[in-house]
Length: 463
Image (cartoon, rainbow, N blue to C red; front, top):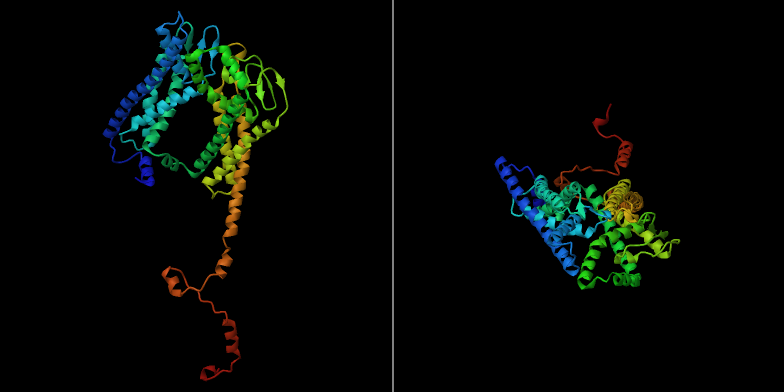
């Protein structure tokens, strides 16, 4: 099947070949398949969390935590994988949760969305939404039931947040999975307008550059603080099984560290407790929790100006905006200069909104005490990223569009030159092309003057 045929098939959601009875049977089939897929995705996630909770219980047995407690801990970890905050007795609300678990949960739900549409006559966007809802609705019910069943004296999760977060994560991931199961990414992109596709490509390019730079920055900071990292491990003394679980926890928090590094490069930085800040122009920190990833932060309160490395990091967002603007023009090079600049700014603003949302998910409270504010500020990241990325993308997109138009005008000959340099074409060829033939006699005026000067001859000249 060609791409154009597949695009027509996906866009034709109201096909006349599908009757009301067929639509009802398809809805029932999607509902049953969505229920099975939601149960399978939730069961797989719970199985993984139960194995991890059992490993931790075996490595560090506790007399007050039996198998029922292990199952409750597994259900709490599963809810944490949907970014559901947990209230712990004596500590407060724990809201800074690992984004890595959300990515794993989203991967399972993406597979669930693909499995729902596999082998079924799903041909339109409305049916894809129906498939996503068929997965999200029962999945949110499962999340609510686990939030109630997993409550204990030590910890409890919020029931409304569990239902809403479970539905949101399941719907988004299942929608992408179902859409990908129906058509390829190229076909899905071709359904968008050229303006939307160029803005999306610019935002994705800027986000990719910032993510790669954030990952490199976090890795370099950890490598530079290797001694502190080893000291934290020695202080914890986790043992073999505990070291493995601690490594998994750090991998789950690694996306959070990348977003923190991006907030650092943007300028606002992030906080690790009330009244603290970590930014390129200076850092003020207090006592830190004994977690190995936090060993990459500067220890003790201090202030400093912008170092050369800090200046380079501050230039990365502008570079990301420039790349985003170039991608905007690359996907739609026929736009005018002002339209390209506007699209470039929109791509930067969209990337800023995405970064602000990720910053909100990357932080949160770690209790009711001094660590009630941890992570970057979502609104500051959104505003600063929109300005830096948007302006840089607008300038680069406008400049690239102006250069392309200038090059095109230079390479294209003018209409006067085309008419002058046009070779003699036979009239029969022009008639075959359906055009009009105009004969021009350059010596007509001379001939007319000669006729007037010639004496009259014959009777026709008499008055």
